[in-house]
Image (cartoon, rainbow, N blue to C red; front, top):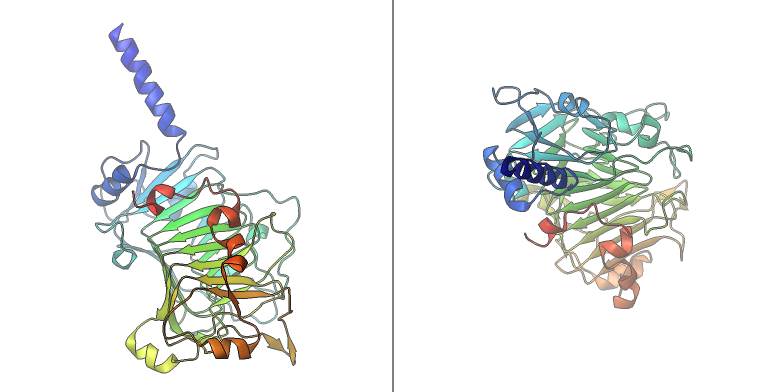
Length: 387
């Protein structure tokens, strides 16, 4: 009788574990640091370790069942030169091996690729430059050309509903300066959280496409030109926006009426915006715009964040093509709320005419991820709350 009860208990515990996407913080950190106490069925990736079943991240992704079961992949220390493409809709967690699970600057797993897009005809899409692509189909991932982008078919399915990454760097090494779109991340029609991760490129580093919902926590996002851009929704919490140079703006959002009924845009909250190093800081002082509108429906807010002396005194700028600006009064929303630091110049902000300085009344409707995304079950709140 006793063995039967134990068998049922084991089965019950396994079932509960299988239906729970978020890993317990202690077991996740232990898994990342020692490779033990990982979720049952965790796949291990390494080109050299005898304990690994896969040599590339993509081969591990390709082996996952096409169903709704949560799946975990542990990537052992090293540099992986590959493009990673994820279309699976079932929950996926990628864990980078680390002994410093709360410090993105000490990540030991780096996925890198060198690709950019110099094509000016629109026949080559930016997505093909990406280190990591998360989207249900190729069409869903396409950036497209112009201020409205690629017209994704209305019947396109939604992709991954709960994608999570911890302590992994994504580095597009196409060029050491802005030389055409070169994505570190392309994320469309999916829900995803990135915790203690790094995203490195120079132009168009992070693209959040149509219906993309992405949450970044204590991560590093580095670039030079329009390096946070897209149609979807991104909340960047307690992170570092690293300026490797100035060009265009930090944000270049392209609002769209095809989004779900949420508050699309990019929100940089409780974060810091600063030059990548002392040498760069001297070169870009007072030169970096907070953003510019790719189309008139651009929406971005820097809230309660530090801005160093690299920031253009007027904050945001208009995007002028053939003497026609894309900023539209009452439609374009480029704002700051309680920002601080040497990058602040309230007089220049007002004179510039495109930066909106918000009080609580103007910011309140955007003040939490819950108000912006509506559905946040896919966010790892245990990490965010410090557990």
